[in-house]
Amino acid sequence: MGKTLTEKILSKASGKECRANDIVVVDVNVAMAHDSTAPLAIEEMYKMKDTVFDPDKIVIVLDHVVPSPTVIMSNVHKGLREFFRKTNVHFYDVGEGICHQLLIENHIKPYDVVIGADSHTCTHGAVGAFATGMGSTDLAAIFAYGKTWLKVPESIKISVNGELKFPLTPKDVILNIAREVTADGATYKAIEFEGETVSNMNMPGRFTLCNMAIEMGGKTGLIAVDEITERFFKTERSISSILSLTSDKNAEYIDHFEFDTTDLEPMIAFPHRVDNVKPVTEFEGLEIHQCFIGTCTNGRLEDLEIATRFLKGKKIHKDVRLIVIPASNKIYSDALERGYIKIFADAGAIIGPASCGPCVGRNFGILGDGEVCLTTQNRNFKGRMGNPKSELFLASPATTAVSAIYGKITDPRGEIK
Amino acid sequence: MKSIIRGKVFVFGDDVNTDEIIPGIRIRDAPNLQELAKYTFEPVRSNFWKEVNEGDVIIAGKNFGCGSSREMAPLVIKETGIRAILAESFARIFYRNAVNIGLPPLEFKNITQFAQEDDELEINLNEFTVTNITKNKSIQLKPLPTFLIEMLQEGGLVSYLIAKDGYSTI
Image 1: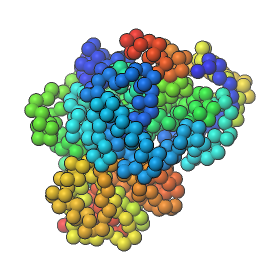
Image 2: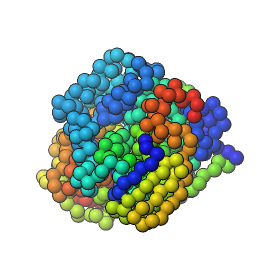
Image 3: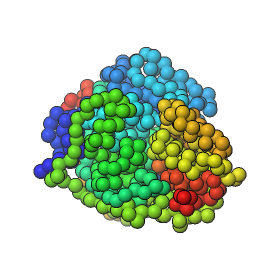
Image 4: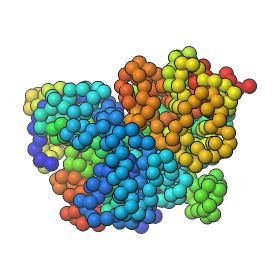
């Protein structure tokens, strides 16, 4: 019997031939925690060891509450800076970016075992890594010992075929998948994305797909290594050679979902569940108060570029706030150079510091009672943006940008000339 | 972790997520776990912390604890006095986090039909049985893997790894 991507990566990492449902202990290549999860991880680590196992494998990012709005958070950040100076782990201070984007830009590679104290760590499976989220105590153990235990997950294959024609985006693809698979349809499972649409998709789109594996309960999302992966590592990371990784033809999958993008429409997830998904047309005309373009799902340069195609030379509606947050400072700088930031500013948008921003509801952009936000993030749980009396709709950067212009949910297809 | 847990039942539905268990903004502002626990389930059941007595248990539907990796979610539940969660299924990060802090996450397919709010339950973690004292009936749970039972008995992952000096023996 052949192997899935997961079985191949975890066989290499554990040093033994492993199969779904085996329990393995693996060395961790990248261990990440952020300002919300690192403090507890560090506190627990010191109960086990006096220092970290290997500082080169540990990444701490200040991204969740950035810059700090409270004395309590400022002291948390201060404590994490002190930890960095003491241990020499990789450290990214406020404004450098969202943890997942910084791992993409600087750390992850195919075959890596990437464990992050953040549920969206599944993003990194897009480069053929095994990447999953855990809590602070699991990270503490990795900081101390360099290892973790994993149950090798069974895999679900998701095939997507067909052309993805602008203004349809990878976000519409994954929202449509979430509708079908449901919020717990992939619990404990690895999702392998494949098919023509995925093969033709560039890396930013693949990160968007894998980012939302967790929204279906998935342990991770993975995509095989191909020419697009190789090109990404050459141009973005200056890594000229990476290991190849594909699943075997006779690998075992416990489920297989097939999607065709031919008739796909722009999709939207409505409150308060990520799998409450319908075509945008069903909500057209619904009044909105805030729009947000950013996050580890859709805060990359390509996402900002899509938004500028609609916002160039336009003004946002007077009753709407539009917040735009590049996922990293590098993206911010690139967006400046390409003139995107000027387009946003001229349209009346607020440009925020590279961070999670309002997605985590702890800093700025918190909604008032009864307000509605249309956002490119991955999660619309009740209270996610800091107010349980508000409503969150999830959509692509295209739908979000065009809706900001009209002050109501709008199908981006009507704007394409 | 105690081997025998006895208390009354609090019932929750399917897909209870971590933002419902403990909102992010409360985590940001709480000076300590004791204060934070007052906001447990704030968006869906705001006086939960006042209603719980030590030893009580949660019964929930499928996918309990979905969403973020925040370990504060099981930590605040434990801080209120809850000593076990029985659910049809758990989101996996929550499941690990619960084991890691010594709060047993127990799965049973039709658990929501086994007990109602305020029923008195006794959970025996040596035998993996659950008795509904109010309704006078019992069920047999599937035992957890041995190393996870040991982890719970030690009180969580940190004590387990100190006792075993790392992961070598799993």
